[in-house]
Image 1 (cartoon, rainbow, N blue to C red):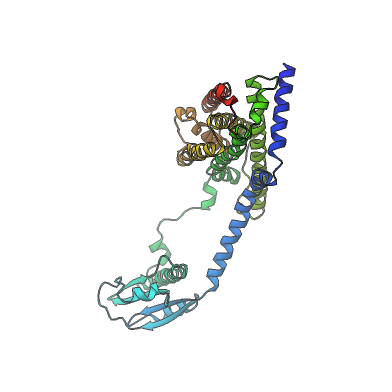
Image 2 (cartoon, helix red, strand yellow):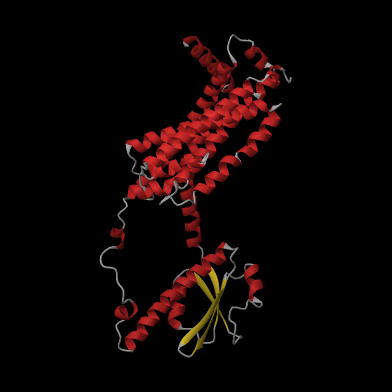
Length: 405
């Protein structure tokens, strides 16, 4: 038994050394997962904030078309980063019809058109803009903000003139106390729910994709180079060869996923200092079961990819097979994001891939349902064993002895 383990570890070390010789491999499988979440969580919000600040700093051009525009509304618009240009209103109905103003919005000479006319005690208005222009959308947002504020002030003024209290008249229903205190979920639980919506997706896709290259290189790649024949001539069984290669691929994939988690924890820690997102509240049990779920998923994925790559007759063919196979992970991963975990049926936790992703979602929310845990552990174990047996069958085929070089 010890000699068999020694042979497996020797094969695994040999594969790891050969695979790690290329600096591009180290960069793709180790550096990228370490930086993925920090770049996503830190650089992306900073970029959004920069773009928002840039939009806030610009002055948009809004054309006012009205024959009797309220002076107080004009003052409010002038103080909102809006340059006003006045034109007479030539239309009596259908203020929303673009007419020639549509061409001016399209060529960017103006950012928005506000049309208003007095209809008795009511003001009719239309706001024309170009939804595919950020400047035009910004102009629309600023104008609507001022319009709604002016409407609220005008409504209160009319109520006061009529001898009514605006607060009692407009807001007969009031929340007693602070609305924020009504949510019994802690900030940590809320953070866990937010993270559960995309962490399982990213982990599953990265686990599958990071195992593709080493799986191809250690199977179809060795057949093309002619080195697989030399390995088969060693005093080791086909199963030992499979386990050695599986251990090597699993090690590479595991390191990539581990570094990705390190990057995620760093990003969450950074966001916690900015009050953008707090650290999720996870018990020790949740952390342990998350590790078990990722481990079982990795066992199944690595064995499945090794088997498919071994069936391929060339590196190119293996890549054309395993590349589209990513959809087998991507579609279930996207599907599980919309499943409601409240009152979910147990059978969902027995479906391949879906079971692990749903398990990760529940665990990130620190939910423990014994029936669900038993179901996904047993089913994942069965699928992992089936994938390993399928890979073992591929490694026992006699045609893999033939070199393709």
